[in-house]
Every structure is written in C-alpha cells, then in structure tokens.
Length: 229
Image (cartoon, rainbow, N blue to C red; front, side):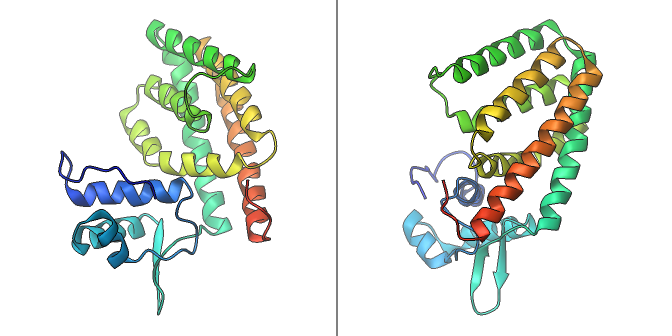
C-alpha cells in the first residue's frame, strides 16, 4: 500500500484508515484472500490498533473484508451471485439516471459532457490527457448522476461507486475492454447531451451488461490461475 496519508488533519483517524485500506483493496494492492494484520498495519501507519479495528469492522459490514476462523481478517472475494446482484442493481439505477439526466439536461451539463467526450476522443486517438484513464469513467458517471437531479438516486449510486471502480479495473484486464468502455461512455454522454432519454437508457444497460461480462471473464481467468495483467 502506498503511504502518504496525514493522519493528524481533518477527518477522524478511523475514517482515514478506512479509506486507506479500502483504496488499497480497490487498487489491487490488497488482493482477495490476503490477510490484514492489525499489528503490522498499526506499525506501518504509526497509530494504535483501535482505529484500524474500527475501520475493518466498517469494511466487513460493507463486504470488503471478512473474518475467518484461525486466519483473522482477510480481503473478501465476492461470490458470482453477489456480483450479478450488484450489476443488476447498478444497471437499473444507472439506466434511470441516464434517462433522467437526458430529460433534465441543462446548458452547463451539456458543456461538461462536451468536454468529457472531447477528452474521450483524444484518449481514443492516443493522446495523453494527463489523467489515469482507468479512472476516467467515474467522471462521466458522476456527471450524468448529478445531471439526473435526484438526490436519493445520487446517494444510492454513490454508494456503488467503489464497486464501479473495482469492477471496471478488473474488467479492463480483458483485451480492448478499456477502449470499448470509453466508446460506450462517449455514446451514452452524447445521448444524454442531446436529450435522447430512451437511447441513453438503453446504451447504459448495454454498457453495464458488457462490463459485467468483462468482469466475470477476468475473474474466471484469475481463479484459473492465469496471469494477471
């Protein structure tokens, strides 16, 4: 895990530890089945074990880690049924957000979507936009979710953003999936920008389905012991 957190500022230490561990899981620095030892982490971060224990309890309640007999806390691996359930919920909520965003689109959001689709075209053309491309989809998703102007829907989708990032990162291991994902996001953004509600909804469902297939295929490869990209 990369260090660099300042545990003396702003948020309570337990919140910083929570985000620190979760980010390490989502980035793949902590992998499924790997043990998280409180003592070692406390020494690494120069803090007591109490906030680490609190952070791990919170992460366990969210399914990121689990406690196993005689082994302790390990990074959890989602079951296929859990993965499909999350993708199903994500598809329904994201499609609704895209449809609402297209219906409620304003000039400010149109300009932002123009900017984002322009960046996508630059990336597809091989240009460097100075941003981690694997994180770029979050900008598109967040912009569309905000444009839906539905606070409750936004909160529900934000609660899934960690899964969106983790699933996309794994799915991107599949050949050409990152490029196709960018193309799908571009098409969704254009449909939303142009107020094509039904098209935006359908394209979002197709994108989530393609993301699910890529993730499950990558996961199957991992479980079969294939080399990770």
